Length: 272
Length: 248
Image 1: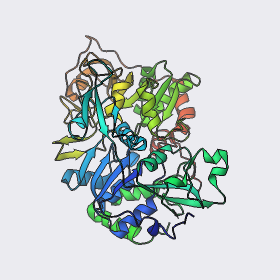
Image 2: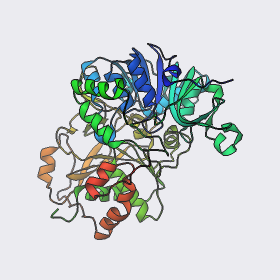
Image 3: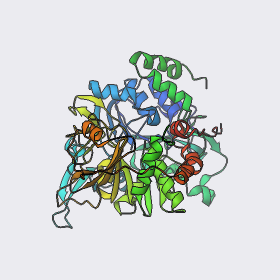
Image 4: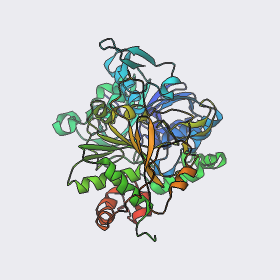
């Protein structure tokens, strides 16, 4: 029988140093409470894969020195401007960056979903994104005539870390229309979810809820994290905390300010 | 405000005309002016085109995850998309990655997003860059996130059709930009002074038409409130629209 984790810390225990960790884009249910717990634990050398972009989450992990390799098609704070710790790390060369483009990350995870070694993708030819990716190959379309096409090796993460509205006592997690969370879970060896609440009953018993449910078969751990995406939003449930994000952008603009931010909002239990 | 409208409103009007009569317009990250234009085109077209704002919950009909947009585009189901760039050059190459050496950049931008794919497969890509300067419009980009044109054997049903800046509108064809019109209050000389790449131009360059009062009304009263969900700062600054408080 599925056991709900006692705490977020217990749920994320399998995420160790050097883990290849896949996380969702900024509007899909980002497990920020779990991310702060990882920083507090002092995790190191993550190979972080953002599907396909990230905002605060990647900036925080990079700034706190948790990331060795970052695979993403962008990191930005949106209207608040560039992601300051990400920009600083890239310009000073302290992380290894695998620059990608959004559909390439989706496709490479879909390859793992299907258990195939690679996926082809249009576009990319003649770009410097392709030029600097020595793990991507160009082949002649074997079914075409003089038609070069890019092949992307499958991305198989050790762990997918997600945040969603609810789970049930069977480990089923309701993700709604955030289907990229399903792609992540299908592709990864293990999936860890934080949720706002526990659903009474079995999510798969209700056909309306079942359509948006990620079956417990894929889930290794679930912990409750109330407002676990804060200060980011949880789609259809609560919005981003714009004031706090603006505060982050201001504080993280300098290394000293970022250290203060960590002290106040990550190492100390948040007051919000 | 001597002209009675803001730069952003003029640019959105220009972009709405470029969108033309199509079935599906998609708008990516950090694109408030194109989003304004797409929603304006939808208001004028009475429900068409379909508009997908990637970061929106309301203006986004995708139900198969973030990949659906790209799958849709790969099939030719997206007619118009928008790209910007930290740098754009005269061949229509866009740079969303960095300046200087890639391995040791001077300035790092967010990253290529979907550009390295969408630029190839969306038939009408409209480039926009409000800052029109020699810093942004360069002879040659430092990093090609996506090229303006491709070799004959590269699968490429899409590409750039125009570049909109705070000073003017360029069209793009056969690997080159042509100055199409200069916005009110700006001059061709100023465009020449502030553009780092070569471009073609007619002997006499027309002025970009100002938005009509009906267009301004539509933008301010109908479009602006819809923008606040995705672009709260932009909606507040440009249109004075405040987002409804989030449910806590």
